Length: 320
Image 1 (spheres, rainbow, N blue to C red):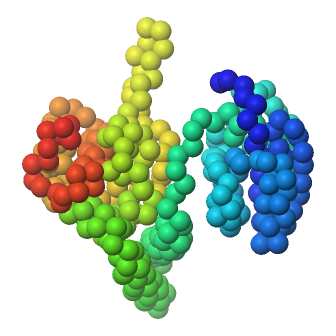
Image 2 (image 1 turned 60 degrees about the horizontal axis):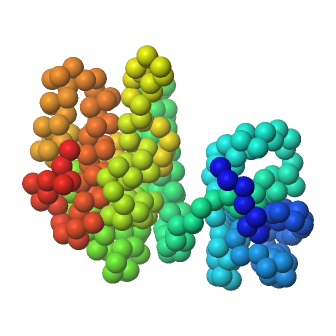
């Protein structure tokens, strides 16, 4: 990692406040994490001629300030906690407080290369709506598990009604999300293309549109790594370790797993053949399903890249 003299700022975010530090000058500021605080922050950064800002993802508390800074023309790098943690290890930093964190984030942002284009601002609200649907699904699953602990008819009937109520809410919210996404022609087209792949239902297609905007813009290897289904070697010296998947976007991966399991058993002939070949050759069920998840993702990437719906025989350059 090369040292750099790029002037940057780092922001450590909490629910009520923002701790800011600059690099390499070490100026510091604390403002409220509210609109008036954001306005004060912009004036402070502008006076110091800072254009790039690093901010660590913090459970959504960073969303408003990130959006405001981008509106004001700043280049904002949204860093994952593991990125900042890895950089701290590299710099041999062990102490931790808000001011040190902000300075570390600023230095980390200064050492980044060219940033990717900022995300589609429309997707943030859709992602929040999708999260609500996911939470409804978790509640439904928990209630179904809870039924196993009871035999009393009255309690079982109550739990059944609760499950049915949440299922109706989940279906209504899913339909509403589809409607608001499809108000945008480009997103509606992406949704249509993804949903054309055998085995990908509207729930998974919405997840890919909202949480994986890179789909169709990067290679099959890159999209697999982004989702966390790319196999990585684990070799050292003369030892050859077992390849494994790691990292990636867990919410996208979970949706694809839910789609790939039935698709590999019935709905997608290519995945049925892949699953059968792998298991017949001695691969465990889980590894075969991971391969099917990766293949399903590659199919979705291909149809968006081509701009044409799924066909039973995808182009050779997108085949496994």
